[in-house]
Image (tube, rainbow, N blue to C red; front, side):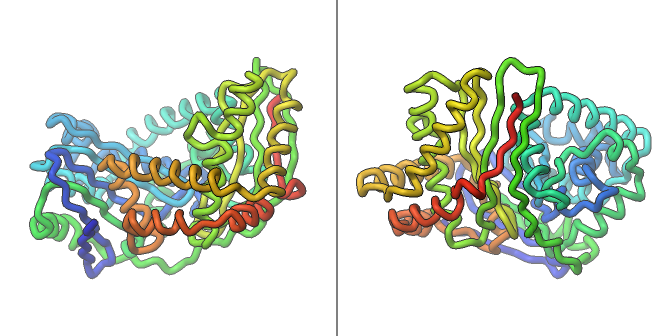
Length: 406
């Protein structure tokens, strides 16, 4: 798997993988998310993700939206705690148009005041919709609980009060401080020669003023073990339980990914799904996940159940975690778990859009992408003892926090 790179003097980097498909995928990955906001900027990264589409020095909002859609393509964006990503899917012949749009909206947006006010209403509706959904809300409130008084604990969307307060100066200040050119990656997969792509890249990005990162992120080291229960007017009880985990560069990260997959990953035969849904019929949905950040991580299990089954389900999960802490996986179990994870990674990698995202995120954090063979090798080298040690370190009951909507 060959990746070609080109970096400009301003620090912006292009990474490309050739594909024979007539459909191309490209994204601009910016190392700036909600954790980079100051208290008075809560929700700003997400707000900017919306308003960069609302007008530039040479395009109105309609022209930005229609530019790729008129030729069958798609243009979209998303925000996380640590990243902002603008991405597009399009036919190969529209590469130049796509890079032109990326450059224009990220570096030349004018943020018309009327458009800013309209988008505030859109985002406030999004916040209210989110607050009406306990399945969505409980994840954010759990991170607020355990990352107390740190930006990682704040929701990405912000609050109605914070969003209403934003003005054009606030937007431009956040972008100046955080849209640093040495922390921007353009990831591409498509049927175009690298030389031609570099020509387009230089045409639209070489004149971007250098803005190098000077300030380091405030390190997150204040995980707070918390247990909270809240009465909600809902038919079901919702629960999320978990603990602090490894950061993105920790050597145990892959082992914890495997362990989460065993517990309740994206597979119907996971331990908790087989136990709680198939055996007892207590839950419709149970899932285990692991969010890793640049300096910390969080692993958690979510389930929803009828209120009378809440304590039973919770106790069964704790019991299953103790089994993983007290018993090494057998050779057959471990082999099956490895094969399952390798299969999932391979299938996901067969999708060019997923690969484009993976390239951008990996280069942003590691300045490289591990080939699949290397990933497979790392998985195969995991031992039952390593998995046991990770389970004991991460799932120790005294470290577990929980949030319950009763």
